[in-house]
Length: 96
Image 1 (spheres, rainbow, N blue to C red):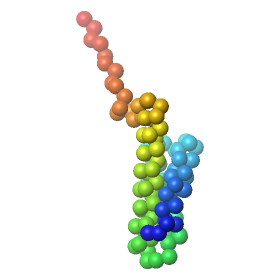
Image 2 (cartoon, rainbow, N blue to C red):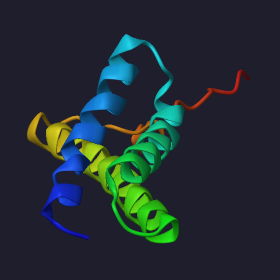
Image 3 (cartoon, helix red, strand yellow):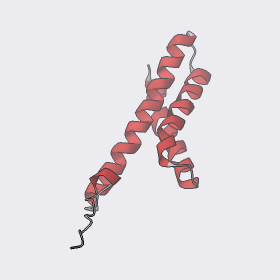
Image 4 (cartoon, one colour):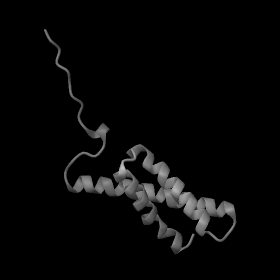
């Protein structure tokens, strides 16, 4: 893996984020990042196919981690909860 592969991570993350803003559900964005990273890795790479596939997977997974980490930092800076499982559950009051 060289520096050109590492510079692809923010590009793939940007593609995934653009698709999320366009209306793709958030749960599909990591898979899209993985697929885009794999395709770009196969196109740009100049070694054997196995190595190219691994580099593409690294790029896609790195882009997914970059996106998730930046969302978490953004939520921390704005003092809000990001994930649904972080939100407190509403209790139903029993009627007597």
